[in-house]
Image 1: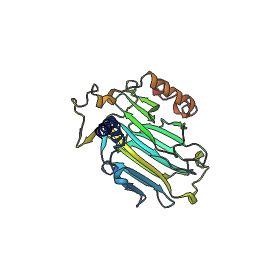
Image 2: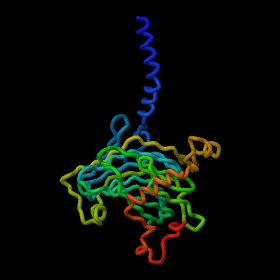
Image 3: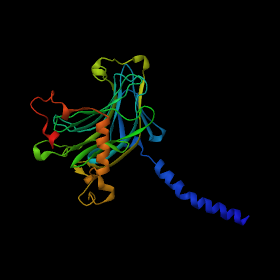
Image 4: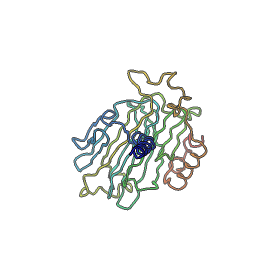
Length: 292
């Protein structure tokens, strides 16, 4: 009997690290604490004690939310599962933005499509109110079948967009050649699901099929390693924001050689539009950051 009890204790001790690890992995932020639903008249909801947020779109209205905090630099992760089936005409937007006429903005926009056709992931960077820096991609998986992680790394040197940890775009600070970079304006996180069938799918040729409504996009596992901004001050003081600290390594993070290779792989195989290659759009010459 004693040997059986001892054996059980040994097994439990061996299992403890696995159990603790599982608990850590399963721990998620409470979306109720991080976000406010801002519009949609009941079409946006938070479930499961803050673990899941859904946005809905029907013919009457879309819906949206925003972060309670403003951020000035950070690494922002969110898992999204996009509108399934015939999502043509719909746009799921997930982005950082400041306010005012010279705003900064870092965009993910997911452009819906007919069933079986791929989503288009549209990215753009605005600095001091100027955008026109679009890059578009197909994804290498079905973004409607499960949740995937979409990340923005924003530090004073660069902005890196990633999907499931794979970088898809890097926008570097090119202030040295006169290109404004988002670095002075704190930004909130915003997301919305809305009807854009005048342009979203094949330039507006394919309209939203309202018989498929309501359309639903889902969100979970939000994480922000970031400097929050409140009352004109950053939560990252010079002492706590040292890039040598592991928790703040994102402040000086750049793409290592392996990440650069993954970025090249994505851009070679999945990029479908790059403003830096569009000489017809910029007949007077490509934007200066394209050659930086």
